[in-house]
Image (cartoon, rainbow, N blue to C red; front, side, top):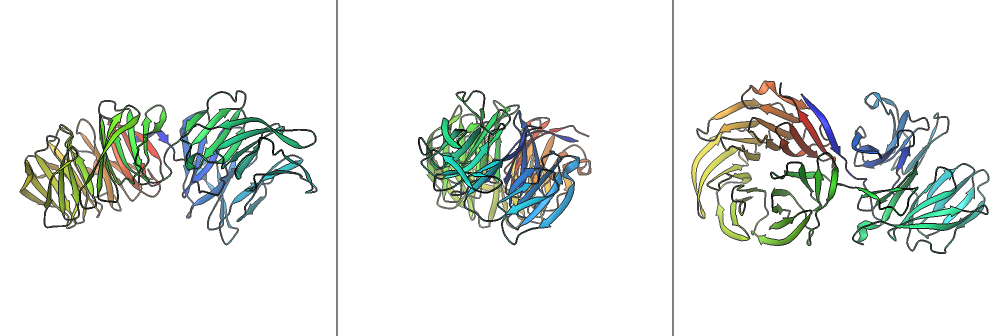
Length: 538
């Protein structure tokens, strides 16, 4: 069996020029936000405890707890509102098609019997008791009488925001107001008896000062002040001590397509998404920072060893970054002349890399191209042995070609035919006695490296393309991840029917897999989340 141990959540989806809505439940001290089709429930005092609701058919836009905390109403860009329980596996209570387009906000009535929903709009309002306040791109905040709708006050322009105000939240006692702005600051305002708001404290969130540091969402809940940046980072302040540095919760906003676990410190996980973000995670802690690169480029493939990260994207370049603690150091860029399809490092001499392109492979030694070899077939995946003396190259036709490597040349030693779809991934076992391959027709195969015979067959339990696979450090288990959202773990000395299946591991499909140790599998997917699963063999 496999049990979920930790979840490293995605960050909220954001859009430049638009505020986002963060809501919460003071009783459970949890917050709600949306990313893609997912609604995320996070607990402010337990960051590694995350729940994900993924039943919307379209990107979700807003979610709010009912006043009694028993239900959640969430809406999406199609105009659909779903009401579901916070317990019992999110049982669906009702679904309504409210509008013909995007729903931007919704709110419960105090008795939990009615919901109001609204569509496109430019301002943001927040009602609290007998008055409500609106903020807008004109940098102003206006107070109204909640019964009559008359204007009764405003936020002072003295020390006010210098950019559009995107979101607002009242303090629990209705005496203070929190605002966030495109000027990259949050402000706490004191509302006087004559309904004039004066700045009590300006909060400047730590960051690089770039566009991603604009603040687009906020919430005041219990003693927590929550702000969210355009880059998706969540800042948690203590309302009782605003001078204290905030706790940062961050991660990916887009599909996580690659994972790497550092062998010298298996608790450290590196993940990358196609938008070029590399994040460092530590088991038991969670988010541990973003790896800054001087040149931000898209990432399709990522490989890492103790002191280096090698990546490729959607151009003709392969990047080699030195890894210095929590940051990337100097980078070398190698133009290989074609778009990389896959890359593999010779782990015992990681300066040697094999990169597959559509027509063949490229051998790299450090930043030098040793050779570019046309193989005469359409290449889709590759792997190089840890000692750099053998390569396995997979093709669009489902064949595996085994080559010996001598210097800058490849010599074909065998062609293996078992797959019935394009090869998607190939990985040597850590002890190099086996290798595993998988294809777009949902099948995986484990091979004996010496005899090149099939060692484990009938690995046909996915229902869609296999995107990734990983070996356990002791070479006893292999895990596969698929577009069908599942992770399947096989013990190589037992029949494939003895598999362990993790259903619905990632909404939208599994794209990254790695073993942290013999019993913990790390997975990532289109939902921009990372999960750690503890495996107990059957």
